[in-house]
Length: 50
Image 1 (cartoon, rainbow, N blue to C red):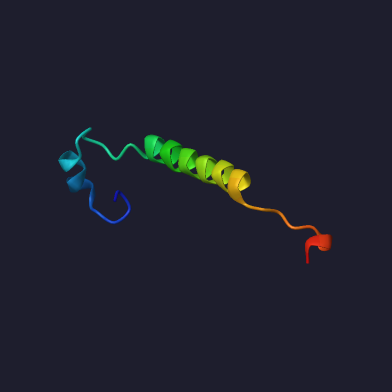
Image 2 (cartoon, one colour):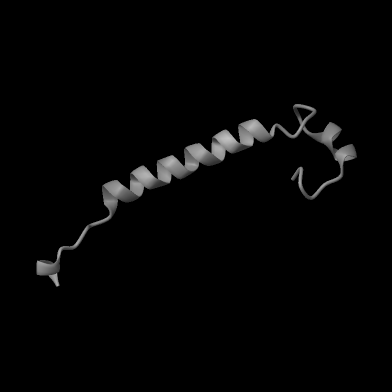
């Protein structure tokens, strides 16, 4: 939201700032979690499987 809203809207956030660092950490955690889930559930096929 910090990209699309003006700086005056920052005070409306619960923390009073955009907290881009926390946003980056949460997005990275989702990416890592999705990768782990994909690696655990995706069935790799070999050439012998067709």
